[in-house]
Amino acid sequence: MGLILLVLLIGLLWLLLALLPLRRRTVRLVFTSVHLAATVVLVVAADRSSPGQPALWVLLFGPGGAVSLVRLGRAAVSA
Image 1 (spheres, helix red, strand yellow):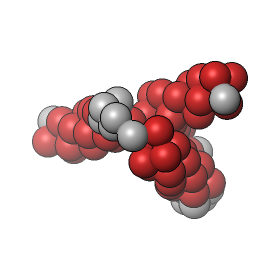
Image 2: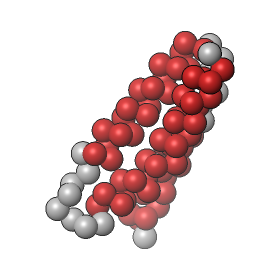
Image 3: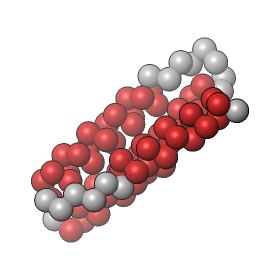
Image 4: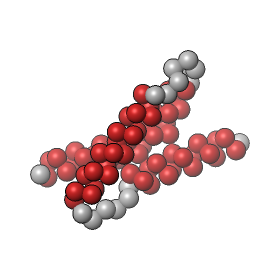
C-alpha cells in the first residue's frame, strides 16, 4: 500500500511540476524543455529486465511529459 501511495505522489508531483505557471516566456520554454527532456531520459533509462518496469515509468512520468509536450507545441505554434 505504501509503495502505491509513493508512486501516486511522484506522478502527481511530476504533473504539478509540468503545470507550474511561469509568466516569462523564455523561462517557461526553458523549464518546459528541461522537464520534457528529463521525462524522456527517465523513461528511456527504465530497467528493461523487468517486463512491468517501463510501463511503471511511463505511468509515472507520462502525464507530466504530455503536459510539457503540449506547452512546447503551443509555444511553437504561437511563435
